[in-house]
Image (cartoon, rainbow, N blue to C red; front, side):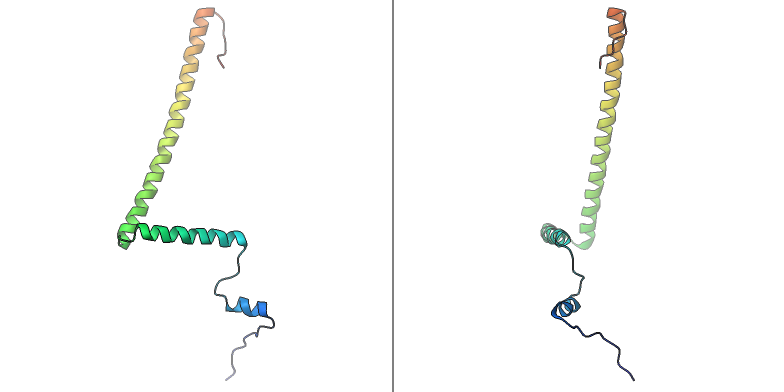
Amino acid sequence: MSEPITPTPQDTLSAFIAQQRAPLMAGLEWSVLQALDGLRAEFDGLLGGLDLAEKREYVRLQRAWIDAQHTMEQGIRQLTEAFELHALESLRSALITLTGQYIDPR
């Protein structure tokens, strides 16, 4: 039987790349992965006493909290816009009543 053909590295860089499990990455990618590794270690330490189901529930609840916060922020924006429109209309009406002229309060 014949043996499989395997390329033999011709220089030290090729040998180094062949030994690596993962592909080489840019400095920014490496920095991001380093930061994520640090966060993962901190996260694992924080949730170390929980089993897998409890960890998943914690993550689910965190996502739900973030979604609720976004919903609340959107509601506040909508309430503010509605209040401003109503207040401007009331001010326009009051200015027309007082002066008899249309005055844009903006």
